Length: 407
Image 1 (cartoon, helix red, strand yellow):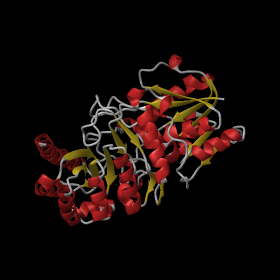
Image 2: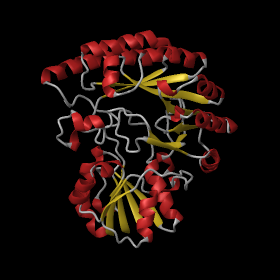
Image 3: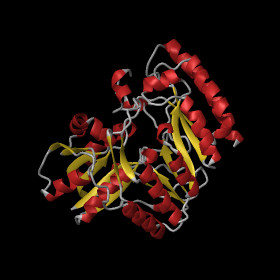
Image 4: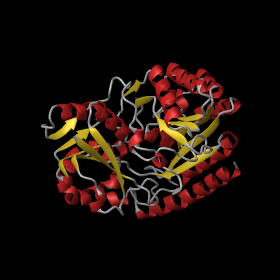
């Protein structure tokens, strides 16, 4: 059968319009699984300017609803595309979080929740007879067909300004799935357990990437917490060393130890990215980040001594943020100035599927207010509190810009 995955290429609100965002590896993994059982698979990228007449015909339309911000466009397009395919299904993040809503509002035959590699292939093999919401869990074995990157143009695969901000043609991949932490602002669906790929499978994919994409100059690992397991982190680091390939990864302060830091330092790791979020211990506790801000000081010194570039992520505006907590973050930045190489600052958005979404946000489900880089939507508090947030955010923004410009 001809199966077309419809993917909304969201770009109008991206802060850096010249930088390609991460390709949808989750969707491409599902595409690869379907190709492995003999299906004819296509990926169709579209945006708000794409006419309904441009969409290809197919036996099955698979709507890949990766974020809530893209959902309104899917709703508006679905009725116009009804005759383009016999069956209409959906999956990915937003569909997993709101399956009944997506099913009803888009008039679909099936909605797949969670990892789709096994559930969709089983559904296809069963003759596509089952209707409704079909739930799949976290895969126990990740040595599966590599993402079908060949289904999308190279310009969406190669990424600039990654791998420490210096790459021209980096490529993304994963070495694990899942997360064991409970950060309240995070909307990850694979929560509670982590599954690791085998070293042999990771080695084969790196080799494959370098053969298929010879311009590749670095790897961006998208694991939620790459440094969760010492043996895994060291083993994967050594694979990149084998290919003399620069790379970057996500980490947490409370998962770093000397063995991991040394392995990253000795094996071409160009940058380690850490979500600090705030310099306020009160807010860290409220977020359930699970570490003490004092822990960052010695760890950052150790990372710098090892020669590793450090990028941190900050979040401003989490419920409880005020001028005092912002000033704590500013003091933290001044204290750690010489140990931090790059900073990304985001404003709080209550991501659907996150614990904080259910607890405190105004719960309007107005998806038009969502964006990747949110600005000043009032998600909580009074108008006066929002005014204070805007002022304190700008103070923090100025400090972050100053530090970034000094590097």
